[in-house]
Image (cartoon, rainbow, N blue to C red; front, side):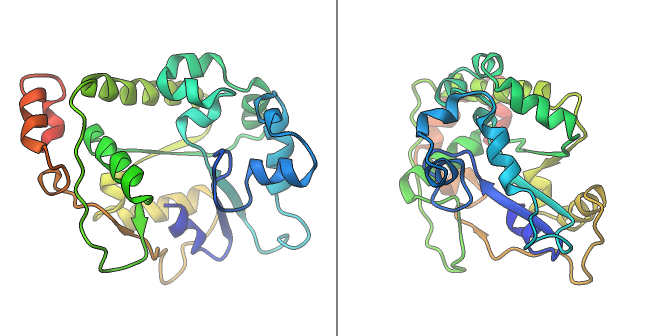
Amino acid sequence: MASRLNSHPSIVCHEEVFLRWVDSEPSLRGWLRATGKPQWMRGMPGTRNAFVRSLLPGSQLAGKTGAIGFKVMYNQMSLWPALAYLVPRAGRWLEDPVFRSWLHANRVLVIHTLRRNHLKILASHQLAAESGRFHSRDAGTPEHRVVLPVPGLKARLLRIASAERAARSVVRNLPSIEVYYEDYIGARGAADDALLCRALGQPVPATGLASSLTKVASDDLRETVKNYEQIAAHLSGTRFERFLT
């Protein structure tokens, strides 16, 4: 979605600017280094506000940028992202209150991207951990299969649902749009692009939005997960069985 929004001539969507090990700029890590501030200040309320203000259009962007934004993962709203990843509700308690106030004061539009199949989220994360990427710009990317650990699998699926609930709570009083990944990469993609452009006050380009990224994994879990039958037996008859399809 970020790459498709970036294909619009008047929209800028930065990557995960709060990610500690981000390999692209701008980033909070790079901004702290450039301004001579220690990295531990990322855990101080207000630091993110100062950094985000540096992302807003300056003289070099003024006049051609109609909307600007950045990606934020659920746990990155917390001053303690590692804890927020493991315990989403705790992350909710440890949100940066100054940053949250800034979001509300500026009525920031939140594009909340979700995925219906939480098991595929785990498969994607495992694939990214092993291959180092979620997507590829190579059309002929070879298939890679992963093994999903069975111990703790249900707890990991519960954590994803908990993180979604916490995120919805964060954006409850902000203008927001929910977009489901399964729809966006399918037939609804163009309609969702048009919806997002309208919400951002920008016309849809005549050629639409485009991305050079392609999926790394197959959409069929049987082709992606080596121990699929073991996973299926473990989740059969539980609330998570619906994720097996």
